[in-house]
Length: 236
Image (tube, rainbow, N blue to C red):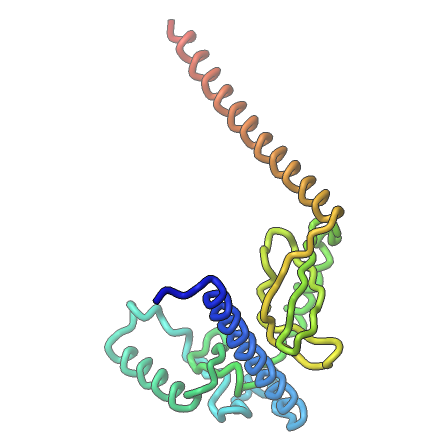
């Protein structure tokens, strides 16, 4: 028997809630890992890792100086054996972590985002990042869209995101009332008179930009045609 509209909506709501609960559990697990790394002094310095100090999460080398793995299609037979062994070891050590991996440039040892504390960003790279961020144009409020996000606890948080991003990508948010990270069940765009006016201005600006590009293409085509005509006249 086909499901009714209400039954389909109920199933979709249950799926959204389950996904939100999974995101919440993952966020809590990551928060607990980061706190443990701090409490137990598990973070290595760049100098300690360069000196061969093993990861304080998994015990493997952080900087092995073996060079990056080639693309899997370019592995030699010997490298393929080593690569498959490393993959099998990683899966055995982190069977249920469901986290990202990280490794250092020039090294082949993979580390788990849940178990292995990353190295601090070098000060040089931090300076470059600061310079990049300082050069960004100031945030324009009329380019932001407000979203009302309902959390697993039932509370609603108000979040702003750039209009080009669509719905906010984070699957969890900090609940200021619970003082805990919660999974996001639903996100609804908040439409106000100001937001409608801002969207109309953005559409107008996009239309102007497209028209300017079309004019530029037409002008280039006109110049090319003019050069061709001048060349033909010069031959006559």
